[in-house]
Length: 314
Image 1 (cartoon, helix red, strand yellow):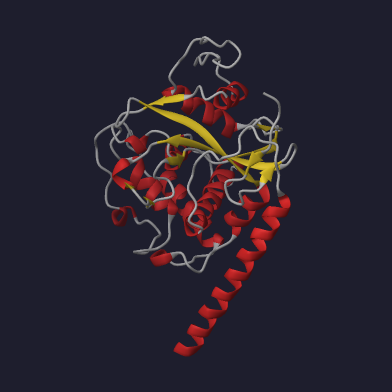
Image 2 (cartoon, helix red, strand yellow):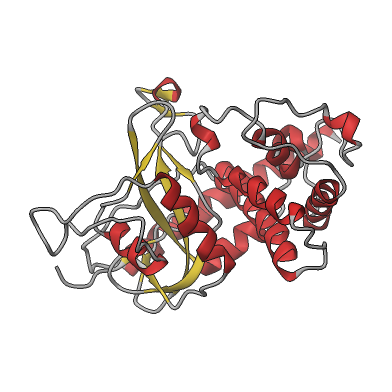
């Protein structure tokens, strides 16, 4: 097969060769109790994000290149190694490539994903889960990860600075707390007893990170979901890396950004999943343009209606 255009999971626009992108790794979970004949409730009901995004450029074969190799890529590979199902070369030696933990690198992992060869062992549910990815135009990810929506529901709309401060407070707590082994069954004390700097009902991703870390290891979501970064945070705290360490700061900031992105992703009624269009070189930009103009007109009318209703209530 020759080269093809990717598809953005936010805009649904084509992604051309060399375009800056964010790759979001996904695990197939398909929680059947959340599925209905007319759709499903949650954005991550079928595929769920596993790791923070990998940034680079589109390689015109459904993948990513020119990404930065650092602690984060090492973390992703190490975590995948813990759960990946090893496979030998299949009948088609060109596409049914081997998956071996011993020599797994980020480059090989990406190649295995492109050939749909990666499966992860699970503690609950089906014996294995497929592992894939969703590509997003970098400009779309940048916008959604830095835009605080006013419609975030009961959690309110805190600033990015406040979310980051929660992360700093959570990490500072870990630095100054006698951590238990996360693989023991010893429960975590109430957050109030730990003097967590949070308020009831506050929008705080790090509260959930800490609470969920101590969940049962038999829980499907204790394997590779995005909150698994709490384990990494505790590892860094165990090693006494200070708050001003670049890796610690980057981790807290990127977790904060992804939290905002995910909230906006949900508000836009999107679903995490590999996108349609693989193998196609068709762009149809004029069709996108005409449709987006209709969408913009429809949205504009709805905003005017909402503004009018708010004026009537005043």
